[in-house]
Length: 251
Image (tube, rainbow, N blue to C red; front, side, top):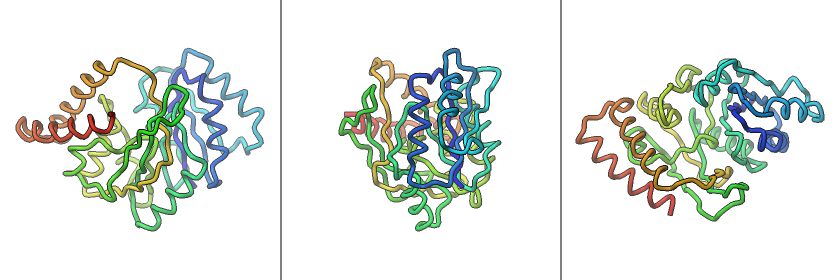
């Protein structure tokens, strides 16, 4: 079984579509864990309304409500702890999966005998309509090569808990917690395998691109120093490679 973990925070505009999208997956052995991170909108009401009208067994869809808003990392960790499946998949409430996402990615994982896989993805606009900007992924990714390319997108990953522990995929309370988690896993000697097929659309709302870039740069630098444990010179070398690839990916 695949445990699909969705952090929910003020996702009322998307969450009913997210649930319907999971229900349409061609791979049917899943559970959906929706972790509400103390939303202030109608997210929980929408979830309950959607579930009341769904034909899916309610035992397969779980709503966990947190009392305090603590961020996506904490919400995902709560989901990891209650997950019952052999496999863990993360899905952000505003992203879109293709109907065959789980089926194809799971088949790829079994073919590779992998503990950790991820896929290509495409940028979408505010309506999650594909823009044609595709992020292709390498066939394999180890720790050293991951340092200069933040190519693993959270809504594309899949883990096999028979080969990697729940503790290993727990996310730290740091900016860019997802990248910090991938690096920590890869640093332990695990190799991630990339399936270069677009199975996810990354919804990308309109924001200030300059402020986004500045914040991303600060976060990646802190990850080099605090998570990867690199010195200033090595951090600068990897940062240069990251900046080139990140710019090319978003053009």
